[in-house]
Amino acid sequence: MSRTLNLELKIWRQDGPDADGRFEVYPALGIPDDASFLEMLDIVNEELIEEGRAPIEFPHDCREGICGTCGMMINGKAHGPEKGTAVCQLHMRKFNDGDAIVIEPWRARAFPVLRDLVVDRSPLDSIIEAGGYVTAPTGTAADANDTPIPKEVADSAMDAAACIGCGACVAACPNSAGQLFTAAKVWHLNSLPQGQAERYRRAENMVETMEQFFGSCTNHGECSEACPKEISQDFIAYLNRDYMKSKIKNRRLAGQS
Amino acid sequence: MASPTLAKKSSLNPIRRRSKPLPFPLNLYQTAVGKKWVMAITGLMLLGFVIGHMVGNLKMFIGVVEHNDERIYDLDVYAEFLQELLVPIFPPTVFLWILRGGLLAAVTLHIHSMYSLTRMNLTSSIKYKEKRTWIAANFASRSMRYSGMIVFFYIIFHLADLTFGVLPWYEFERHQVQWNVTESLSNPVVAAFYIIANILLSIHIFHGAYSMFQSLGINNPRYNSLRRGFATGVAILICVGNSAFPVAILTGVVDYDPDLVDHPAEASLVESE
Ligand code: FES
Image (cartoon, rainbow over all chains, first blue to last red):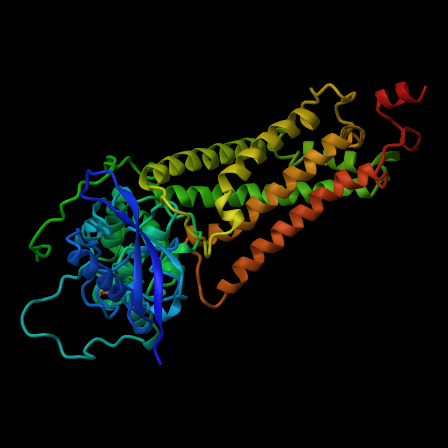
């Protein structure tokens, strides 16, 4: 049996990157509680369009928690109140009738607001460009299981690779640090045999690119709490370790363990 | 093999430039991850000092002992021992000064890395316009800058009080440690300040002694759960240990009696006459 909710939304509206933003209050009436948070915004937008007003721009794409496009601060929490859930997977049944909900875009110097709730997260792409790849021979794909990888290592790499790049870690961090994102991307490749060739170059380049855009990690742990994929802070320690090794290691011996 | 071709270079310009690399090992201090490393190592050095300092001070509870056929407060024996550290190898007090130099360098680097990382963080972040919620961050982790600053001023005060003896409210006498410490801390205002500063120091350690593991990359699921316990344990140890001194002096558990020792502080004799 589905309920309907009447809510009051306080949403950040901003007409463009250089415009001054402001909060505006919108009623959201008759929202079915099995709608997702984004569907709730869709319903509000329909009404706005009908009234001839500009709809609220919000980032979204897959709506199944895998693409990392969605993301906003809901009542002061990145991706809203549910742990390990992207906002597209957040359901309105988690809210109560009559709730007032505050929605703000991600805030960081490196994430300028494009419009309303949409921010430019391309600095994350710059970090990937700096080393988030492996050199692999072209041609036919290698056979699966060609390279033996211990189960624990594969699991660890997989946990890191779960990062969808939504930027919630940056948004939740009081320093706007990009450590959790970078750590996940680095560890995904640095833990695997295929990533060894560029291991130290990768750690160095990705960290140094990250530091051109983001703040520094003070180990609060807000990032892991905000992460829709619950990526562990442990990867940040691994990243720090690989980065310092990259500065100290004799690279001519890097092939030796 | 070249690096992969990308359809479109991302459009945003960095908010800060990458500095030209300096020669090793100075280049380690050019990046935030390196600075956190320095922060952690200097923090560890200072933590070691704080623990050693506390253990040394516990000697004030021992009272008077027989040393070289003289009756003397054990704390003063310990002070003498510090002056004579590694004496056949170094002349007296030289090794002590080397240790002090190391501490001074650690404090300087700890503060400088804090300063430059704080600036980096302030230029990277934008405050939320509405209230935001803290889930994992705690009071200790969020107040590091402030607890650190207060502790820094406390250290200066403490040096002026008991090392240089330049504070006006008691008669300082060199090499009479038991006399100096009991005189200074029997003033309730001074004692209260010592206690408050040590509570802040413990709060600082509660986050610092955990955070340093992460910064140094010391992380292993086998023992990760011990890291928080270690930080909590050390913080409690420092808080209880260091607060015990002013409390003991205020309550008279630790005091100074010129009649019990062979070479009492001169000021103590003036007073009792
Ligand atoms: S829309 Fe793709 S993860 Fe939310």
